[in-house]
View 1 (cartoon, rainbow, N blue to C red):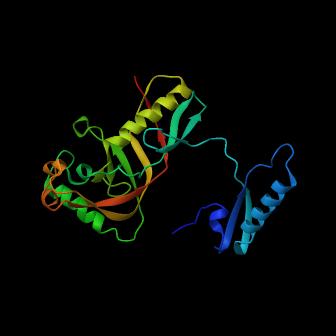
View 2 (spheres, helix red, strand yellow):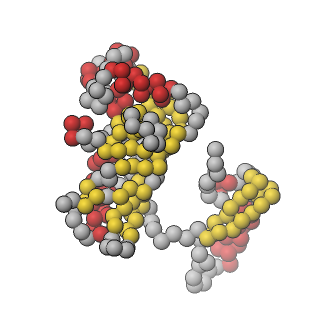
View 3 (cartoon, rainbow, N blue to C red):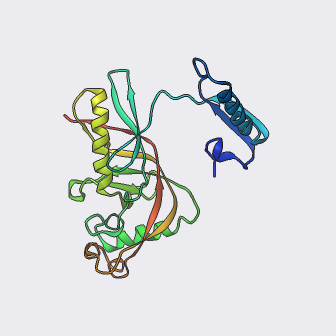
Length: 241
């Protein structure tokens, strides 16, 4: 499903009919002959990965990705000029801990056992399909957790992302706000461009206190379906009024 993205070193021993090879800018200053020889060897490896077509492109980027020290979540600040600066960042979604048991079948997030069951059944129906979806920030009573839709454009939530994501977004907002130099920023109202690429099983150990907050039968069995969620889309932070 789509292209395979990787480095030249990671492509050793692999071939494809069509390959796109992106090169960085030419180096400035003097280099030793040994460095040029090594670069030539790497370029040769990349160029010989294509069976039929090889296309070259420029791979330079003016923006640098960052990681939060606390969680390791990756993000790339994006500051736009136009009618004033706009605060945004591409943020990694789908880390371990982004989805927990409470957000899957918890009584605080699903109004009834039936709605939790429908979400679990929907998840089991995806199979090997890749589902495009999105998430919207929840109510205060739900801890402002983001609800992930069944699919893009749907009204029902499949699950709710954990509070650890909200904490990370606040930390990213502080970094972005320092560049924008406007008011303090709130978390985005929407997380677009998410993909569900499969399902997994989340298991709770016997006696885990979180079980008491879940609907039956999951509070008894301790086994819950969870989506494999990935994303690195652009999030727009809201200015506090």
